[in-house]
Image (cartoon, rainbow, N blue to C red; front, top):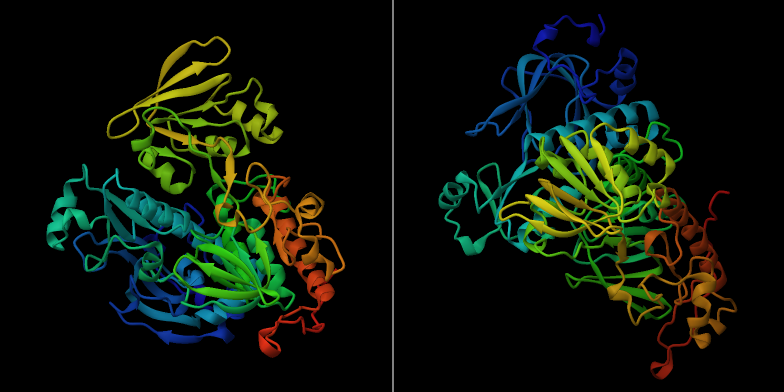
Length: 588
């Protein structure tokens, strides 16, 4: 009898309503068997524990395993029960994070234990198995987020640090629950229990025993097991600033071409694209793909080829030095690199209207992820914007809110939104499109209650009830740290190629015998891709394409420049002494 055919009481298992708990086939189990070891289990055995790192990918061959939240704590409850053929773990296993739940054997049997490193390699090599595991892990992660699992953030809704921690957790898709000190009844009891003074908030509490007082994003990352940055990044061939689609594409192609590649991001992998509930016009995914899933797939690819990802790590300086570049970070660490790919993306623009400041992060948002949607419940919400981001957000929120009002300043929804999105938005029974409409004021004390709208054609005003407001009104580039370093356009986007030509320092380029390459900035070997680049097409596919193209141009720069390195000569002079270095050319 094969392991998956072992008789058991299937009624004890959690039904797989969301595709988060698939069962492996006998053939898949046979393929996995050589990579792991079979192990007997005993009743009550802990296979992995919440707050501790995953060490193995576990498949149940016989018996049952219960997945428990807050094991042994006052709020212990069952998340799922698994039988033969199912596998354990969730997204943290692939990402190197700590577990957000505990696996307890309820019926003794046998498991197949595969070391994590081998399992990651299998996911990368076997597309069918990899697809199955990744989709299940993403589904389980979203279920945990919806359950309010993981750590707690205790902080006031009026605190900027509370908003910072919540954004970091949401953007990194980390299961957590926010406890608002302004109105949650359990907050005061928790503060007393841990002897925390109000001025020490916000705090992060996990497993009712581990406490961080107003941690930085890096401290929180270390707390929950994210691979936080080291004190020194060292030397690399290519340093990519930003881990959105453009940056991740550069990481994948750079590492696969044999270049030592480091990718850093100040907040999370995936960039703004990761906040999209569904991207339906991305080549190769006819049924669409969520931004979070796209990001996770790209991260797995980058790891597969040996790229190093550092999150959170915020860059604040770029300095030419000895034919290379020194990158400095806000934590004081530094890195040296032969080439730089700027893929830092954009920030969404704030809506500047009376009454909005104290509601941002509480019921006014600039992203529409599972986290924000879970706070809407069945209330009506409003989305401001007429582009693709606004359309995607409206469709996603319509699955959670009783009504979605899409507020568009212009007179035609087709002006800035893709046709396929317009068709879906206009057909959806819970979405109302209001053209010629602008928000003039928001009202609400502890949370949003209503909006004052104005028809910009008739100038008539009216009130609209809404429990949350989602804003997608354009973006500004993340280039404040680059002013005075390289040339930017009037809006702050990075100039490249022919557009950068008039602003270059001719003496700096004469020794190279060339002009800036297509995506190259006014600094040789520094390239800009994706949304941060002046004149770019603001689409996920084009961003990924530019990231890949940048690596080809990095090779061309290295070959033409000979990877020049200035070294100290006699009496302190620094002549150019480098010579051509052989590099592996990318595949056509």
